[in-house]
Each structure stands twice: as C-alpha cells, then as structure tokens.
Length: 565
Ligand code: KIV
Ligand code: ZN
Image 1 (cartoon, rainbow, N blue to C red):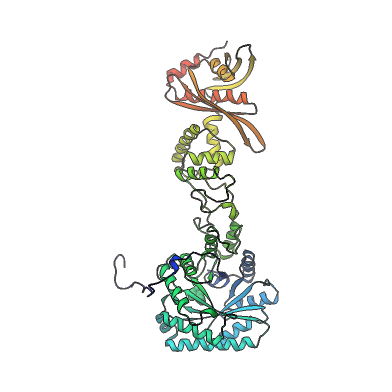
Image 2: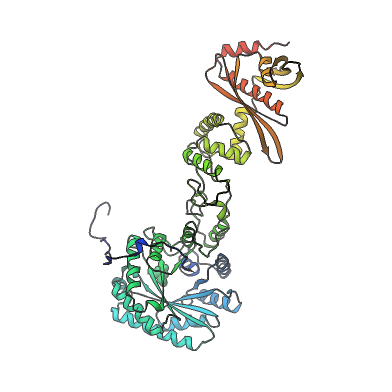
C-alpha cells in the first residue's frame, strides 16, 4: 500500500543518550573479525555448500587472515556436524585460528554442539536467544524472565560440559537475538546474567555479540544502543563487545563502523555481504574501508579478484559490477570529466607516497587490479579517456589538439554504433582516420636529395592507380614534400615522438595543416621506422583528410594539378 502512511510502520525509538561520545571518535585500530560465511552465509544459499566447498571456503578464509571462523550450526544438520569433525580430526585448523559453532539455547542441541567440538584446541560455543518483546512472545511464547532463565541454564550446561573437556580452551559467545529491537535494560540484564553464569572475568571474557538481526533504523541509533550497552553493562570489563549487523536497510557496514566508534571491539559478517536476506555486513568492504583510512585491517585482500571469483563459484552468487572495491566497474570511468581528472591524477603521481588520484579512492594495484580498465570509452567519454587509452594500450601520446579532433571521431562512432569501444576498436578507428588514408593520394615512396641550400625531394604518389613522380624543394623534408604536392597547404604544427607497439619502437609524426578553400585545420599522422618517412606520410595523411573535406571542384582541380615533373 504505497504511497501513504497507514500506521503499519512506526518510527523506531531513539536512545535516551544525551551525552553520546561516539560521534567524536575515529576508528584507529581494526576490530577482531569473525567470518560467518560458513554459517550465516551458508544457511542463506540456494544450495548450501557441500563438504568440499566448505573446506575450500574455510581455507580461503584462513588465507585472508581470519582468526575466528564460525564454521557450522552442527546441531541443525548432519553435514555441518560432520564438517566440524573433519576440520578437527584431519587437522585442517591452523594453530592461530579458532572455530565457532552456533546452537540454540536447548539442552539436546547444546550437547550435540559440544560433541561436534570434541578435540578442538580452542573453540567458541555460540548460543543465542531472542530478546525483543515481539520475538520473545512470538518465537518462544515466554516471559522475559523465562528467556533469561533459558540463557542462564544453557550457559551453566556449557560450563559443565566444558569442564569435562579440559583439553579444549572454551570460549562462550552469547547473542541476544534481535538486539536492535530489544528494550535496552532487558538486553543488559540478560547479558550480565549470562556473564555471571559463565563466571566471566577480564581474563576469561564472554563474547557478547549484539546483533542487528534485522536492520531497523539509521546506523546512528544502532551506535547509540552500543554505547548505551558499553556504559551500562555491569560486567563490561569481562566482555568482548561484538556486533553482527544485517543489511536490510542497506547500511550494515555503516552500522558496524559506527558501532566500533561506540565501543564495539569485534565484528561478525561475511565476504561480499553474503548472509540471510539482504546479507550480513560485508567484511571485505569494512576491512578495505579501514585500509583506505590508513588502518591495518589484519585481513589480506591484495588478490581481491581471485577471492571474488572463488567466492562466486562457491556460493553461486555474483559480485555486483558496482560492488565496493570488488566490482568489475568500480575502477572504471566512462564519463569524460572523470576520465580527464583521472588521467591528470595518474600522470602527476610521481614518487609521492599519498594516493591522490581523483575519483579513485584506492590504488587498484593494492587490490591486485591493473590500471588497464580505469578508463573505458563510450559515447559519454571525452578526449581525456580516449587519450589515456591510446597512451596506455597503444603507447601513442597524442598532441592535445589531436586528442580533441580524434575524440570527435570517437564520439560519432560511439553514437552511431552504441556501446563501449574497446582499445582494439579505438586503434582501428585511429588507423582508419589517419594512418590508412590512401585515397585520393597514395604515398608510394620518396627519396631525398641533399642540396647546398635546403632539401630536395623526389616523391612518388599514386592517384586513381596512376603513378605520378613529383619533386619539390624546401627548408626540410616536410616543406619539400608540401611543395612537391603543389597544393595551397599551410603547416601549423609539427611534432614527432616514439611510439612503442609491442617490442617494436617506431617514429610517429603529427602535422597540423590547413588548405586554402577548406574550412579549419586538421591533423595528419604517419608512423614508420624512419622519422622522415613518418613525416612525409603524415603530410600525405593530412592532405587526404583535407581533400575529403574540400568542395568537389577544388578537390578535382587540385588532383588534376598533380603533374609529373
Ligand atoms: O542475525 C542474527 O541475529 C544471528 C544470530 C544467530 C547471531 O545470526
Ligand atoms: Zn545473522
């Protein structure tokens, strides 16, 4: 029922925290990370991972650097139970990695969970109980006091079972589920009660994981709730405060970041934001957000593309092309003004340490990406993008006015054909515009004649398959070639430089010319191993462009004027 307000949805209550401190904080160090890709992420897949897929993902997570990994919900599925057993029995868990297993607060499920963890060097047993009024009533049909009792008796049971397995270092994690919508004093009460039942101390802390099970408000309200908890929990010193945000409103990452400013020390989430419904907080984005603020995250995403492709293969979920950091298009600019700015920023990088390239918040090379896709050309691209691609993909640095002239041709081509122009297609277009112009005048050869004063040239061209020998003299080869052609041409600029294509290095010459009777100026371009030949070809290229632009009578008369000496 849209638009309109019906009373169906109500504003979420704010927190009575007048002297909140988190807005003035900055994040100066990384939180402890827990990946729940194999639990929250896995349970949200169309097709949960098979054992081989789970092991592959587990290894990828440890390679990235996760030290805490929630690997399963062993009491909910035999596959999960077996996976935990396989990890432990086959020695797949690195010495500095702790696995975590989730369980509801029910005796037989806890027993089964503890059984799955037998033999682990260190293990986190993670129990959860819903604490929001609606969930307590609808899920459990229990009073708040009964829910506290359920959490406390589960904790005592885990304590007892843990004491019977002293070779394992046991850690308890408690999640008051749907903390987002709970009454804060009640959330505090249940967390403190669990801490007491566990016998938590500053040396043996309880992980209190405060979940935004369903994200319900702006991230600042979540941060207020975290600050309220940190300030009011009786046993705060004996707890690690963790957050587990979901992305229902699209702000799971922001909520986790503000929660860190508000006192949280640990974050749970998944790679690329996988997880129930809209997903969990994206730990890759969170970690790279820290990295781009100069804070070491402890996680390694320097081969991000590889991680993204492996994750896609495992989960069957594509990484969106505009996903922060990992999307195919996030380092690509199509728009002319962005391309121009990037081109200038990249050119001016020099040896400076600080990364200050406009429109690129992070150096793509830091994530294992090259610079080749930064600029892509379509009908919105300007001269900056075209010039950047010609330079980076083809080693051709164009004079500025040629950039403008050629980008007009690119624009016309893109408008006519639509879509993107690849670097290869761009070169083909450049060749057709400047290098392969054989009509109406085809350059066939030349030789220079040294004169006491100036330069002589004997130039062979062909027009309509008729070979014509021409000669001229001037103060250099270009001037001599212009005179040999006998056309009313003025040369306005000339540049030459090297162009490297693959292993070859050739000379490229650019001439900018105008012709009486033809409006405007144009460029001609020649490429050859020999710089003089490149220059004469550039003159012929420019003449052909001018003749194409010339009125028909002028063109005919100029071509008829090409007479053999
Ligand atoms: O989203 C949630 O509340 C959970 C809990 C089990 C932590 O996944
Ligand atoms: Zn969750």
